[in-house]
Structures are given as structure tokens and as C-alpha cells.
Image (cartoon, rainbow, N blue to C red; front, side):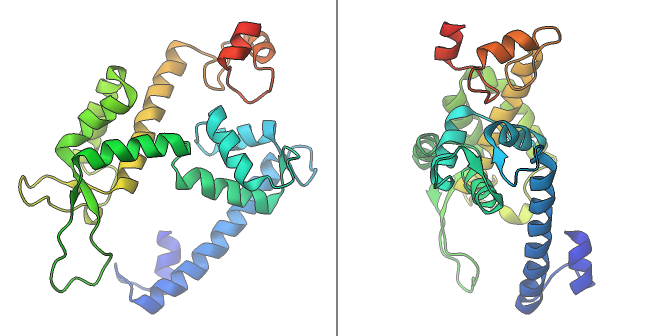
Amino acid sequence: ITEMARKITMYDYMDFDEFLTFMTYYDEFERAEQERIFKLYDQDSSGNISIAELRCLLSGLGMLTLRQMMQEALAVVDKNWDGELNFEELCCFLAVYRGSEGFTKEEVESLKILFDSEAVQEEEKPGRHDLPPEPKLPGKFLPSLLIQAFGMQVADNVEELQQQLASGQGFRKTSTTDSGESGCATISFKEFLILARRTREMEMMQLSKEMPGLMNTPARGSSGDFDSADSDGNGTISAEELYQF
């Protein structure tokens, strides 16, 4: 991104016309990168990505391959219900998956209810010409809401996430504002979704270390049992598959 920006301007900011030029470059770059990834994971060179290949692709991109979300996204983009995605369908699938940060529609709705329970509507400031005011969550409520969403087992992960944010890792300073009353950073719902995703990823990474084979990382010597239990080959074992196994 920095390299593309430097082709347009030597400064740390852009005017609107420069931004449009940058987005043209970025769209071309993203398309080329998606084509490269598609060819890389189309292991049988069929011109389509199978469910098994899709699971590997998502894992390679650092995304959690959870069964329900995959099924929900596939239902949106796999119009012919053949269980495979061509290049255009894959691009749509990734857009759906990223748009919800890997959460299902039901999970997003539940997270929105939590967010709205503590969010405060921004006041419109005179002279502002950027995005319209939106509800923002005071940062002090973030730990309790993430714990409500995922349980007490994520408390340590939430604390680590807060430390990262406090040290400047994560969102740029310009993406948060002061709440006015307490002076703490405020978070939009999209940012809250991203932090919720990070919390879940941290939890699953911890679980995968404690329980090898849980998330696409079969324990050494036990991959045969894992593959046998994972009857649909999606990389996770449902309660029904576990019972049958």
C-alpha cells in the first residue's frame, strides 16, 4: 500500500483525485492477488475451488474456517449449488466473509445488541465534512462486552488485546475519538467486530495449542482419526460427527 501511495504523492496525505487514482491502483492489485491465490489453491487445476481447497485457502489467509459461517457464505455465492467456487464466486465469498469478520448473521446480530447496550451516539461537530455521526462504544466497556460475548475464558486475551491497543497496535489513532466525558477512546461497531474477531482468533489459537486437531491442526500421529471423524472434510468436527465417530 505504501509503495502504491508513493507513486501518487510524496506527502502523507491525498486529495480526492489522488485518492481515486490510488483506489484504481489498489483494485488492480487486489484483483491480481486474488487471481494468484485462486490459482495457488486450485490444486487440481479444475478452474474451481472445492470445499476442501477453500478450507486450505482460508487457513492460508489466516481466517478461521468455521462450519456455520462457511455454509452461510456459500449459500450466498454458490448459485448453482455444486459445492465449488469459480473465480468470481470466490471473490464474492471473500467479500461476504470479510464483511462480517467471519461471524454468522446471527452472531453479528448478537454482537450488535451488546454493542448498542453501551454505545453512545456521536454529536455532530460544526464544520465537519467527513462521515456522519454514528454510535460509538466507550473503550472502558470493551472488556466486559467481549467477555459477555465469549465467556470468562477470554479474559486474559481481552486484557492482552487492550494492552496492544493502548500501546498503539491495532487501529490508527484517527479511527477513534474521545468520548468527551471520560476522555477514553471510542470504537465504532465495525471496529468492535474486528476486535471480537481477534478475541475469538486468540481463543482458538490457545485452544489449538492445548487440544491439537481442534482447528485444522491435527495432532501428530492422530490425523487419521481426525480425518475419519471429519466426514464432510471441512476441517472441523461437529457434535453429530463426533457422536457418529
